Length: 85
Image: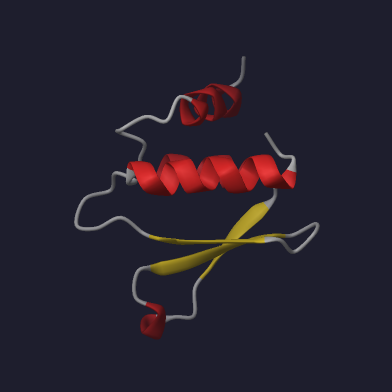
């Protein structure tokens, strides 16, 4: 099992300690890239799929780097809707 597969399995378990960097790696493996509008976007980030241009919007965690559980639940729902997981 590769490192990305392990991260995806971990995401599916709805962890309470998933970091933003791990989340970015998972989304990158599905073909998403990170986009924000610059200084005016604040912590809001959009991940856009480079193949089908689907978008996932979320907020970067702050002040620490741990992703909130409601964001993980929403992300899992969105990825399952897309048929990715």
